[in-house]
Amino acid sequence: MTETYAVTSKLWLWSSDKAPASWHFLTIEGEAAEAIHALALMRRLENGQRRGWGAMKVRACIGDTSWDTSIFPDKGSGGWLLPVKAAVRKSEGLVAGDDVQVSLAV
Image (cartoon, rainbow, N blue to C red; front, side, top):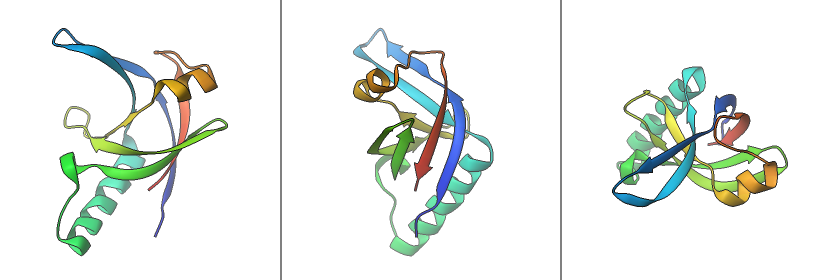
């Protein structure tokens, strides 16, 4: 069963002095995050195990760009983190700080 959620979130940049790379993310919060947490729990009960880091496979869509990826639970916000790769940012003309509308098929 596939569930779809549409949210708008600010694109932000994670970097660390200890890691040479930086990553762009959208934080999925609110009702969508709560529904995804419930779905993750249901799937874990059905399958008897959880994926690494509690990740959930999704099909993400921003504008005309869709891709398969995973979202990860975020203890800080209580939501989920969606990594947004460079090809997607370039294709959609996105930079850190932009408000981005994303659709997630979980």
